[in-house]
Length: 125
Ligand SMILES: [Zn+2]
Image (tube, rainbow, N blue to C red; front, side, top):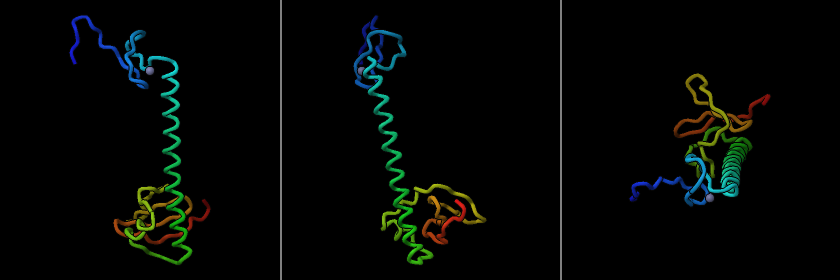
């Protein structure tokens, strides 16, 4: 980009991208409308992310619950993922001796890099 001698670098609106021609140099929006639109979009995106995370946690929980119902005590992670389970979505983690114990709401389990086992309900949640 080429700037002429006395041309001030004008900031651009974070919402619509148009140049902000007046006001303080650290102004981020060209208008009140753009400012509102920007924060509404951010809030909407935040809610969408929370919904997506909760949906996956809920799906993981259903899968683990189904395994407990079917008396499956141990399962390969790859098989679990084949059922739609996503290992990154857990609600807590703690080191239990040398095991990595995770939970998904009221269900706890031990997860290694290849297997999930000791799946059980947490008492007194
Ligand atoms: Zn704008």
